[in-house]
Image (tube, rainbow over all chains, first blue to last red; front, side):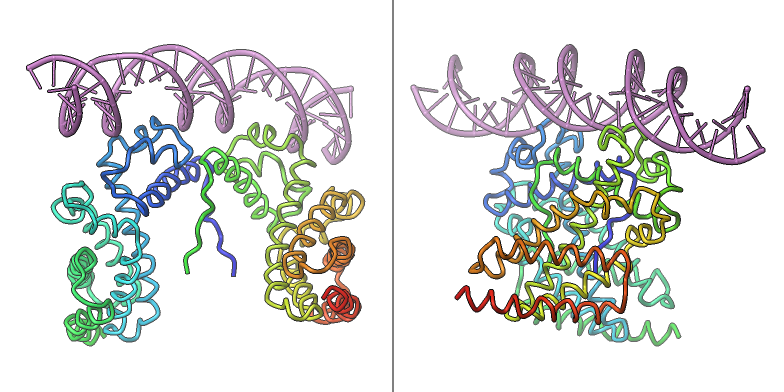
Length: 204
Length: 204
DNA sequence: TTTGTGGTGTCGGCCTCTTTGACACCGTGG
DNA sequence: CCACGGTGTCAAAGAGGCCGACACCACAAA
């Protein structure tokens, strides 16, 4: 099976490529040092781009962090959506699988590691806790859309409610894990399962 | 398993992206009409780029065709290499698999269809028959390299000989199929198999 | 306290690549 | 014969990226 690039005019693709190159460079650097030990100049040169270009594209250091986190969140959602799609017949299993894949991925992710390893004052942590608005709303929106396509008969408001709370739980567990991913996933699924079942039952 | 983008400075990546976008656009258009019914302007606009940019990058219409064909050939080689790697223990099976995957892919490929559907005067056919030099040498080189890594003990000159003739046979069968891919692949493998076996035996 | 160091954010000029519109050239069909 | 459409080329204008420099701020050493 071959993957096809979305047919997109070159100008847009080039811009996306620029952003992705910057993000990937940052991710690579974050694998070795923390966010606070990381210069904007470092990121730019690692991406093969001038510092100025970086600033032109993102405006400021925190803005870049924000954008980067949003993209990583989107990455995760991709994996999660896949897990949901596979278990579309069993909501509880879907939640378990999605949570598990998310937590497992999060544990390996340089960004997440950088966040939990940070001292809290390094700016990244704030973006998923204190000022988590953008992350939450984006992740919630995408997860809602995913659930909507999987179970179209359930009212969107209900799905939105479920999504938001799942996202919040996921972020929380990723930031400070309490147990193994499997155990966490099962317990979350146990909580949400019955509610989801009732939604599915009521919808048909 | 996640696929990683090669860490490449933005400038190079952008250029590659431009070429790929152009190629993909051409491929898309070739799906519906023949090469001769296809304007350079069509290709450019389909890629979201000005006609001038296309000319600057490739120089002329036949030069673009040449480059496009070379890239498609490279695509095929990727699939072929995979087939070879999987069957590294059995040269005959490797040839069979490689040939089969190549012919199957070729039958589905818009470029190949455009070539065989063309009236012969449309310029594309010449590039793989009359003026096939670049295609053959590139494909031969890459296939040789692939075989070299798979069976490092066999002299490179022998591998090169095998490669070139396999490539020529493959192009020929792709351009004018005589039978089903499987049958063709088996017969070619039957021809080359014993020779390959002897090479392997002699090398150790 | 002063001073030096290092990172952030901004500015202006330069350079490269893309776009735009125009043009000459040429083959084909009315 | 001539209008049409596609190829190939050009100069000028625009956009995006690069470079060097600078002010600003925090922090640490003298």
